[in-house]
Length: 101
Image 1 (cartoon, rainbow, N blue to C red):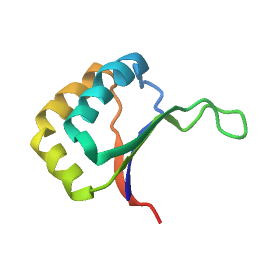
Image 2: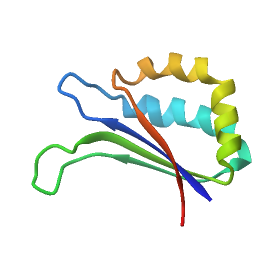
Image 3: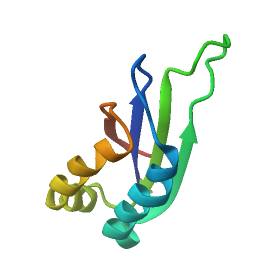
Image 4: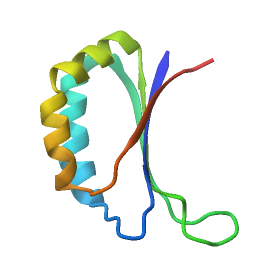
């Protein structure tokens, strides 16, 4: 099994619309990925352990069965994904695919 991790680093001039991301963007992505998705976890960064603002606005973990299928779907829908990002943030996401051990 694999986990796609998407994080949005906090920036001084950054904004993030959780309502749009949670209610529009993620459901569309999940529909595209279909049965490949096993579990999704969305987290909003609140604070670091020292009480300062969290280093990330948002963290998304999507557990999938096939990294290849994920990459294929994302490549086929790259324009839609890129065009949708400005609807909820001006931040550049960091994305990685992890193997769950």
